[in-house]
Amino acid sequence: MLEALCKKAFAKALWVYHANVGACNGCDIEVINVLTPYYDAERFGIKLVASPRHADVLLVCGPVTRQVAPALKRLVEAVPNPKLTFAIGSCATGGGCWFDTYSVMGGADKVIPVDYYVPGCPPRPEAILYGVALALGLVPKKVAEERYKQETLEELAEGKSAFAGKT
Amino acid sequence: MLVSKVREALICLKAGRVTLGYPFAPNDPKPGFRGKVTVDPDLCFGCGGCANVCEAGVIVVSDREQHYRLLEFFWGRCTYCARCEEVCPEGAIRLSGQFETATDDARDLCMRLEVFMGPCQRCGRCFPPPTPLDKMMTTGFRHGLEGGRA
Image 1 (cartoon, rainbow over the protein chains, first blue to last red):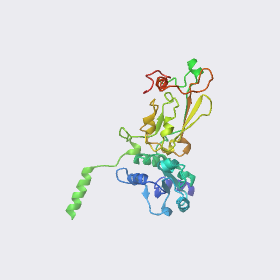
Image 2: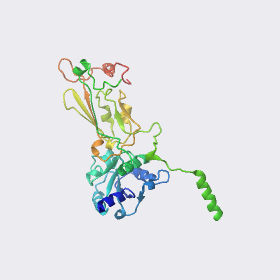
Image 3: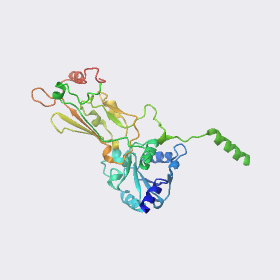
Image 4: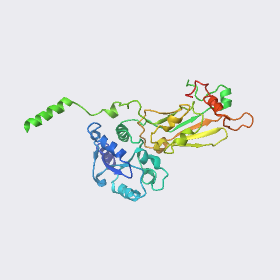
């Protein structure tokens, strides 16, 4: 019952803690943008807090530099359960241009478990809002893994086309 | 002081509602916005120019089989610079206006394209055209010259 109550309360007010782990400040500006009255994330109960111990949600921006990785692990431990982790921006999602450089771990999911990914360089404030709405279950997911295959010469000769519907 | 407060309240009333209705009402980006990368599988002929210029190493080209070239787009780390769109001779790669790409699964941020490479009639291997002129003629061979941009 307590769990159900927690789940219900979780959807009402998400307090977020924003962690910059090597970001260029682009994503940070967009995150702050979301909290302004124009985009107004506070209507979903989202509030920026100053301590990870008060937070439900951790926003991670940046491609986790080697120096900050242990601190990020301790930061995640400091957030009380149940918690959500958002990777904001291309850097936190997959490492960005620094996905294989020496001083960077290459994405938040290499260091901590990530629940939601918001790609973009930087993501639009709307994209971040969309990610939040996705976490709250207000909107459906719009991306999926895509697989395409071109037809072979034999299939072309037989008049079969993998893209018959297209002109 | 009270007058200034009243004046402020009036200004606020005049402004009305400024908050976007975004997740409940659409808010499309302006034209020219660069969003998620899309590829037209019909137009791509596997030259790999996009992989050559990609800043973030999003596009990985590998030749798995003799007649197939595999292009993998790990666009989760894409920086949306649109260099691939610029260099694509067929206009197969486009950066769409799609920005609602948040997901809970990292595997969603991947796109695979298997390109059929035209092989030599005699030896069965893929071959580069011998001269630049031939290359220009071969470009767009799948759909004639009106098929692509070149």
